[in-house]
Amino acid sequence: MHAEPITCYRPRPDRACEFAAPPYDVFDDPGAAAYVAEHPRSFLAIDRPETAFEPGHDPYADEVYTKAHDLLAERVADGTLLRDGTPCYYLYRLRARDHEQTGIVAACAVDDYTNGVIARHEHTRPDKEADRVRHIEATGCQTGPVLLAYRDNPVLEALVQAAKTADPIYDFTDEQGVRQSVWRIARPAAVESLRLMLEHVDRAYIADGHHRAAAAARVCQHMRTSEKDHCSGSEAYNYLLCVLFPASQLTVLPYHRVVADTAGLDEESLVAALEAAGLTVGERRAEPVMPTTRGTFGMYAFGAWRELSTSKDAPAPDDPVGRLDVSVLQERALAGVLGIDDPRTDPRVSFVGGSADAAELERAAGTGGVAFTLYPTSLDDLMTVADAGLVMPPKSTWFEPKLSSGLFIRRINHRESVIDGARPHTKSAD
Image (cartoon, helix red, strand yellow):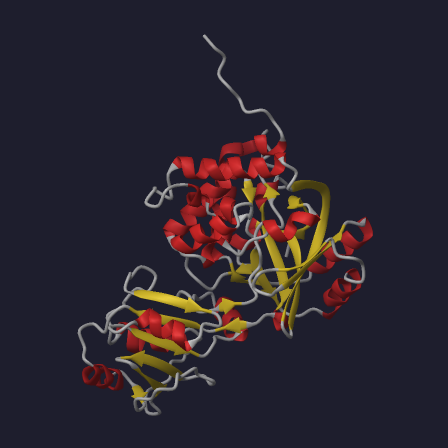
């Protein structure tokens, strides 16, 4: 694959902890507003610019995206963000408790995304993709990195470990308790060694960031069309901001489902319908059910938990998507019993990812809904599905720890901008 060194804006070391923020899409609207109110100088104010407006303001209005541009320009002007104009790779390490993962920050070719070298496993939602397109167009920057996984490469890993013997440029612990460290690789020989080894990565897999990747590809296509014969293929917009991790270092957590109602079924009818759909339903219990093996699920409804499992006499799907627990639950319970035919668009279903506890799921289900807990989808499953050219149901995987946004801001528009210190154009007086 083609993974090139980058130039970027990045925060001053003494402001990195304050500026770096969780990804834009881990917050609902009230959560984003609350976070920005508590962290007004964080990157989330730029990533979710609608938080600068009153509740109820159209989050997709032109002035919202203009606000993102203006806030980014302010952070450059006040010295929070510095321009690193030397093409270099960065190493980005995340440590959470006993887990550690180190990725390579690079610019990966959009052509590798469109031709399948960078493989996808989920569909995107048009509204969310359009939002990120407008954010990129307004700021002229790619701001949120796409998390890629690749099959382990011992030589590449040796290069990474050797580079980490130097002092990091960032080393801080965020509010979630994740220690974040970044190294800068700028020495030409080291840069070239990494670039050549990355060429030996046959395929990378999007683990997180499908909407960011799709938006970058759309902006690239638009820029190519507008530039026509002036596009050489080396322009910044032909690449997308990524962090590449060895697959063995990534941790996948479960992505649970909550349905707002029981589709009019009482408890007895719900149990009977699930069993008719090919699921074995256990007895009521007070203790939460958090699955520890594939093929089992937890269900909270009507004030009690039950364990669900696939019936032994039910035929097993023979395709890599149909075998996934998220697919089994979707087909037999969500669609087959509760009428959730399209979980991408149905407002009755919501998703709770990561290390959510039982109390959170019980609150989400309330007195009239249903919560389902799942065993996490494996990274091997993800790669098998992507290699087959297939897609998983939405919200099949949740990766932690999450990459912070704002540590690497990559300008892709070569036109003069106030972000780069240019004066805004004003009309002359008549």
